[in-house]
Image (tube, rainbow, N blue to C red; front, side, top):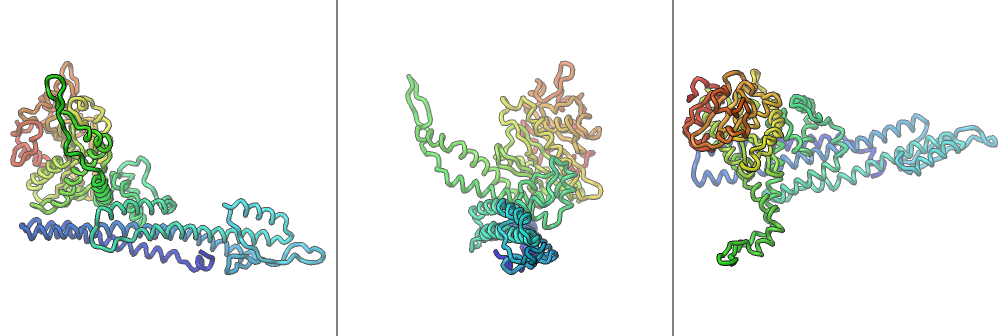
Length: 594
């Protein structure tokens, strides 16, 4: 880039283009929501059969197209804003250097050189003549700096040193603009989409690459924006987000969706938008990676004779495959199972009146994390947050989602027209083995702070004038986490329901941070977990006895429970499920007790 080009360049034009792409992305987002929330949900609610299913399939693909357009337009908008930011900085340096040169009586030439007038003390009766100098670089150039200092101290014309300084500053501004152009041009070219109507897994993985490229190039731009408060409370996070301009919000959503999606206190719609990008990119990445791994050998087992009796063992071929691919193959397969179930919930919006889903948290790392809401918590009059227990992980998230769908249906029927949102909160590392892991409470203690922040975030993001009635539901070890959250912080809830609880780490219901009479317990016939708690797991020692919520002296309402075993509390059509829905809807007088 030369001086003439830089002087003609108008960063505002690129800012306007960025605004245009952001507006296009917003239109794509509205179109996606219209398809998912109104059109597709309306078809599910009213139509059945092959034609309806075919239409839903086409609409799903169209929705994917709009989501891809939304994401890519966000990246283009941010890239243009970042380019404009860098060019504006170079242009400001240039304009300042040119203005200073003119003020000093110098002339800036079209090629960037600077002419200076005659001046200084006469030598042999002559005033030192003027001349023209060309910059070799700005302050970052040691050579230019040394030349400037030498010239300023030794040249008989004092204007020479000043002119050389101006020329160096001009050269530095031009170089900065050239570097910015060189840096951004390939990033913007990479944002060009394929010329087809199919959004493939490859397209979404390319989006990850595009995001990384724009993030790398736009580091200076992103650094110039207000950052989320370090270790901020949900209220702090909300204040940060509310203080951003639309351009700044778009930049954070496009460059750091994983960061935005994790911030408790932000609007649920914003977190959902950010986490959907993370989800779609990871979903596509895992499918492609799994497809690239050789399938496990069909002949997994063989028989060998050891002594008098044959023994079944893995084949050498299978063992070789397992050593090379087994661990990653298992992680990908299990994670994709959970992601497919989350996508299935997205696709069920409108089915029998089911509201839209909000993805308030997601990660596929380790055993995985997922937070899924039925209905918008920010506008709900009644919220319920469910914490699953031992063996909970991304792979098995479908069962936990289904439980909160059933609670939503009961509570919605009982809420007298008020809005209900039920949330599955897998936001912690749950113990994975009932024998080796669940006897230890550190899983609960480690996860409790995140749970407290999430509940506080629901309070901060709620838009209703009177707040929301909030119920916390814990199952099995999840009740231990709920108790730990109350024990080590403040449980921001109005009611607590414990089901199949081995103990909640506190001795009395009044220690669970909810009003007196607002702790509810369920223990089903044949559920062995409460008995395990009575031997010391998760309970609270009182005298020579370990107290759990099923004990009379704990002080909880003992709700009638007509299901069997440890996992039936959410069976459809049962009093066990109905009682939970009644508490969530605030219909306490209708709850049946033992």
